[in-house]
Image 1 (cartoon, rainbow, N blue to C red):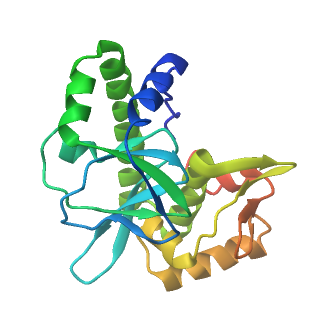
Image 2 (image 1 turned 30 degrees about the vertical axis):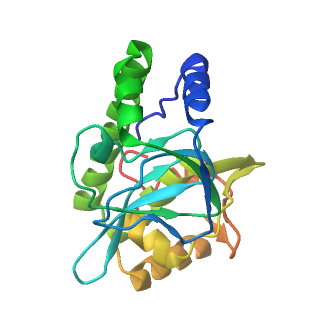
Image 3 (image 1 turned 60 degrees about the horizontal axis):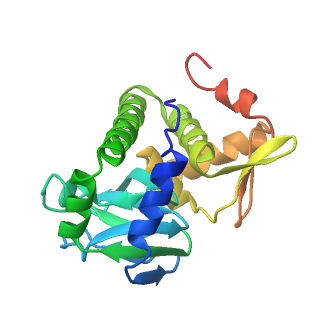
Length: 222
């Protein structure tokens, strides 16, 4: 699993200062920030909460591609690479975003070499994580896919709670399935197996992993 790359404190302050002058929008759990195929209203800076980027097949199956955390801004494929937006961006829980015009953001990035370098570094780290996920989707069985999904969510959303770690978000089995590339039914069966093995505990409010090392042993090389 690729390590998280964070913006430096200085660049993080620059980003926050840039977006503070733009209007803020609030979204509740499950609300669309941008619909698949729609033109985004601007570049969104995530002030708090989490947002998932989703690909939706013609038959309605969802695959979660990425999770944005506070401090991220998106969609950059649309803003910087000038590609049409193919993805849905959805609030995982309640969240707030500041929305800036595309042209203003692109000019700002071009004019700040330190920001551009750190943004490229962060994007490459995200690409490394995506490649690992693609390998998992292609090579793992359903049990390993669910475990890999839980490990990924711990990396991005986990909070230490002795002796284990908690993912303190309301995540349905349908949402976990979208991360794992599985059906909801298969995901539910695998989560129940993990629960019976004592590797996870879950409720409507959170998923708790008593021992992260034990869960990791379910993966190849774990």
